[in-house]
Image (tube, rainbow, N blue to C red):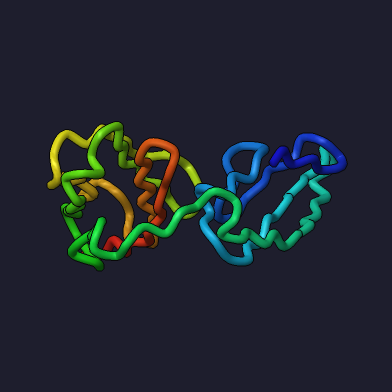
Length: 144
């Protein structure tokens, strides 16, 4: 969903916001706040907020809880992703930070995958696993 702020030239933020777009697949199901911050040349600034509701019918598929597991959670250095072997064909793992920015991506090569998160700041991240035309998003906590 393309975001349009007025006056143009401001900055958008919030879960699922990537640049000037809101991506419901990154945000996941729920209600989210999208913020628009604008600062004029005279340093006068304003902020506008809008709530966005994402339903599961947007294409996010809840797979069987036994199909995919991510552990440990919280984690400090590595997260492990275990997938049912029948699901790994054409699978990709993506990691998004709290602003919705894609910060890591890898193809799945077998039923066990690991992702190094040691270089990232403490916080909440979204792990998006894409399998053919289906996807699942799970939240993880990175802490020391």
